[in-house]
Length: 323
Image 1 (spheres, one colour):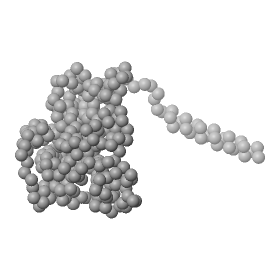
Image 2 (image 1 turned 135 degrees about the horizontal axis):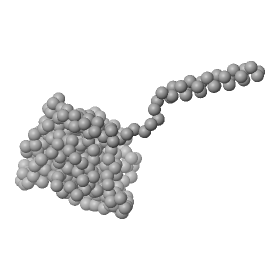
Image 3 (image 1 turned 180 degrees about the vertical axis):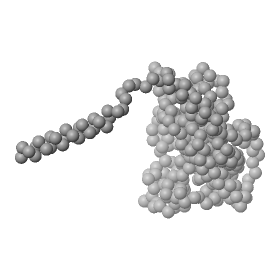
Image 4 (image 1 turned 180 degrees about the horizontal axis):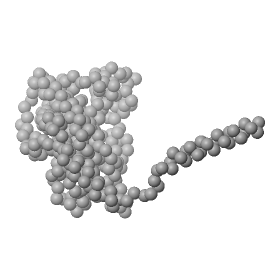
């Protein structure tokens, strides 16, 4: 028994010596950042020469064209299909009248579980505008707080495509206000024309999201962890505009993380009325109703076929509310 204990002790001692020998040749001295700084700056300068990537230029052009078609189609559909938005919160509903689901939280979430107050919606209620600072080149100096008024604010999708090498002609000026001014006297479309517009709009929506997804693999973009601020570039700006901690002492600096497609193209999920639902959705059946992005619901109301990837959330063949 004593011999066995001695062998175990010897084995543990040998294992400990083996572990020590593995790390013996690694240096424990701290790195000299002053020597590394020129190497890091040189690597950043050389990295900027690799952009824009020529292979992503057609994708950027396709995204800009799809964005134009998306705004044009939505501006036509909202004049033929009733769109309602809540007066006190961002909730949107598409139908003959608003629903009675108690999900209104009022301004700055001061209220809770209230009935919505519906007013006529516009294009900004369907396509959420996301703007960012326009940079002359991707790898330029970080935008400081005192420089925030020296840079124009442009749509984040447009800025992403511009940094990918797309032309800026007639794309920065495309805004929802200009589209609404061009359709002062909209024409009421026939059922067939409305269906064709809905199909083109839904294709443009899918093309924009797919193209942005591809561009984000190559071109960096950042989003604030606590608010919806987006910055297209390798690092976020230093403008103190975050309103989440406005009463804090550090003056509202952003916490940046990697942006996703939903940050640049927000889907804005809304309640939908299925064929088996009552004429007006009530709060009692909210667990049975389906939900979908507002653009998808708008196009489906116009006659477009919804892609199968939305069937699960829309609950098209789901159960009805028990009477």
